[in-house]
Amino acid sequence: MSGPVIELIGARKTYHSGDLEFEALRGIDLQVHEGEYLAIMGPSGSGKSTLMNILGCLDVLTDGEYRLGGEDVSQLSEAALAQVRNRRIGFVFQQFHLLPSLSALRNVELPLVYGGIGRAERHDRAVAALSKVGLEQRLHNRPGELSGGQQQRVAVARALVGEPTMILADEPTGNLDSTSTDDVLGLFDELNDAGRTIVLITHEHDVARRAERVALVRDGQITESAEVAA
Ligand SMILES: Nc1ncnc2c1ncn2[C@@H]1O[C@H](COP(=O)(O)OP(=O)(O)O)[C@@H](O)[C@H]1O
Ligand SMILES: [Mg+2]
Image 1: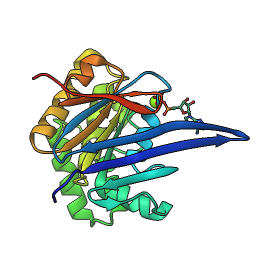
Image 2 (image 1 turned 90 degrees about the vertical axis):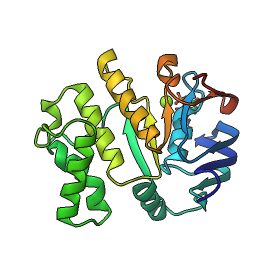
Image 3 (image 1 turned 135 degrees about the vertical axis):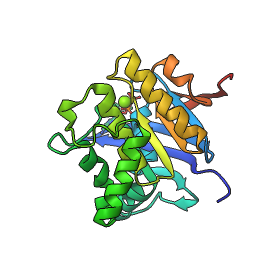
Image 4 (image 1 turned 45 degrees about the horizontal axis):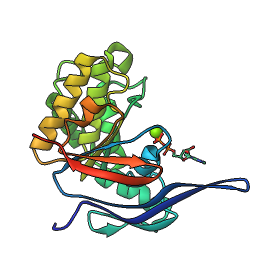
């Protein structure tokens, strides 16, 4: 595939509540190339989560265009968007979002269940993903039996297991101590070195510095985009 993995062209998002309108994204142009590691920063209320929801196909634009892997996903139905999410995007959230009653292994298998992958292959791929994040000894533990850092590594394994086009992380270290933060950021470094595209949303400069490029969002617009010095 040539061209960017992500392309936003004049992206606008307006929220309506009653008679009030609020323009949360006000004409964003953004390209992310295959294998790039981009951090998105900005103050609270600037539109970061709105942008993340758009990039993750969890919501659609009011105006403008979103092309993901060369496919125009701006006008897709809810069902079609769900398919695109499952096929192309691995999510990592601040709150981990693991299912508490399922083992690490079952949590990581879940996206493959939705993807219609058979039992044996599901198992093997989930074990491989958990091994990649250093949790091969924790396959059968539930989230409550794991530390915060380990839970986030399970979430990274779950994000990886479907071989997504990109990993989209919203404040993935927001609930972690500094050691676990280093662990998770180290994993992202490895994934990126292996060619994965990563988009990471954070308000921490130390975290953003790990990316190759930082884009600054302010009042629903990208006001700055700069390479991070090596
Ligand atoms: N569902 C919604 N309805 C109305 N306004 C919203 C909604 N979601 C977000 N907003 C508004 O859009 C702006 C951007 O929000 P958000 O994307 O969550 O910012 P950030 O993640 O940078 O803090 C904020 O002013 C917020 O109040
Ligand atoms: Mg937010």
